[in-house]
Amino acid sequence: MGRFLLVVVLPLLLILLAFANSRASAFPRAKKLQMRDKVRKMFYHAYDNYMAYAFPHDELKPLTKNFTDSLSELGNLNLEYLPQNYNGSALSLIESLSSLLVLGNFTEFERGVMWLSENLTFDVDARVNLFECNIRVLGGLISAHILASENKNWFSNSSYNDRLLHLAQDLGQRFLPAFETPTGLPYAWINLKHGVMENETTETSTSGCGSLILEMGALSRLTGDSRFEGAALRALRKLWNMRSSLDLLGTTLNVLTGEWIEYSSGIGAGVDSFYEYLLKAHILFGSDEYWDMFHSAYLAVQKYFRHGPWYHEADMRSGKATYWQLTSLQAFWPGLQTLVGDVAAANLSHREFFYVWKKYGVLPERYLLEHATLHPTEKYYPLRPELAESTYYLYQATKDPWYLEVGESIVTSLNSHTKVDGGFASVRDVSTMQLEDHQHSFFLSETCKYLYLLYDDSFLAGRNFVFTTEGHPLPVRSLWHERLPEAYITSNGTSFKTNRRSPLSSQVCPETIRGAKVESACHVPDLRVNHRCTSDAECGIDSSSCRKRTCSIAGYCGLWRFIH
Ligand code: DMJ
Image 1 (cartoon, rainbow, N blue to C red):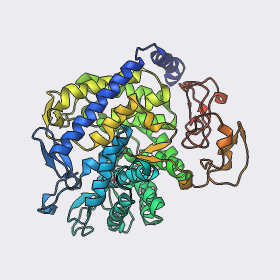
Image 2: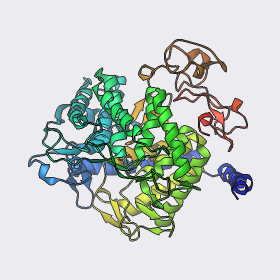
Image 3: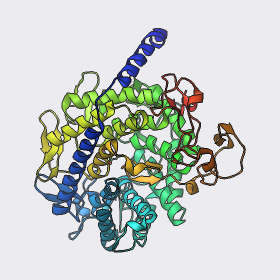
Image 4: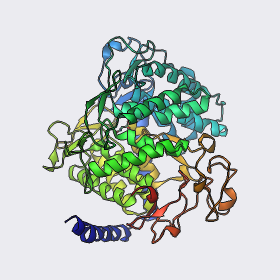
């Protein structure tokens, strides 16, 4: 049976897939521009309403045109810790900065940077979730700082004085007490003024410990203070050492004892960005340690969680399936698969997520695979970005206009089901489309950004970015790269030995790609723009990891040599 599947069904599926991919699709340039303008309007409708009714508080309540100070409320709300005069941290503004640049609005970017430089403070008695504060606030500040300092000429009236970096450093220092545990695994919650509270919960999630390295690593590289990266890396290593013999991890754990609490896990809630950060840390910092962890973890996911195009949960000890559920957060996975070059698999699972999106009009938080029905309680859609994110990655990799149609469908759904006079509202119940009074900040940092980039990626031209899990771009810099093995460095197709540092270094490769678009110094483009291939010789050097790409069984160039 297994052989039948492999020899007959799989090739048939791949032919169908290739046919679906290559079919002509009408998506003329004019329509692309029209879609870009629609997404631009969406962003400003969300942003302008936030600025009008919620700023400087954290997030907008679009139905009542009010605000919420959600940074202190993320996860389990603990109002008792909110001070009377707490004025929020302008979370949605921080989250919007890089999106403003993606949309080409330098003036508003400058205004936002200057306001935050003058007004933001973290010296507040507020208990925040470390993971959320890291990806949203620290990541937002670092990304905006890099973009601002690389382009000081954008600043018309004022000059940028690195204030966002100083704020990020201050915040990073306030994070450090969370890591002072016997295991090095950080507490999930921290009070920005007082550190870890008495009787603080010792339970946290895998993503809570394993998705800090991009922001804290970047902070260390920018400030020269290695404590941030050191703390995040120590936690990540400890977490990885807690994996089972099957290379699987659980979902929740105790930070004091380093013992698992929930042994079942998948690729969704509580774990998702752990996988994402292993690969992206390798791309950003070049270290093979991240690649080795990612490689093993990715193989284990494909082996124990995947069932056809779907992903279920499994017990980390036995690998046995536990919950057969699709969750909205899992929809980032095809994007990650695309990043590693596993495009055919990404395409298959993306189609299933889109199928469920079409079935309900938006993606429900949880969907029971065995019964093909909604979960009885988790029927909401809080404007999540993951499907748009994967659609963007797949379009970048394949240039298949079908993904532009998927994007159009997402845009149409968002406008017809979630747009209200005061912004965009979350959906409380996808079966009734009843709305909820909350516009999450990730709608500005991710959902709108990925949809916009789908139709206009001029922001990326000539640059090479890693997007954090919250959609904040961090440029891939040769200076941040550790030394890579010699074999990855090629010159005119031939390997040469060098003792120089990373092949991303602009001193190493530019001559070898003279005339070609320089995305990174080691980049050798694939022979065809849609990355299709018949042999390894038609594949180039991966622009972000500087590894040789090879031709997969499905006929796509990618990092296949390493994914068996
Ligand atoms: C975002 O805050 C991030 O993408 C995070 O990794 C999990 N998902 C939310 C949006 O859905």
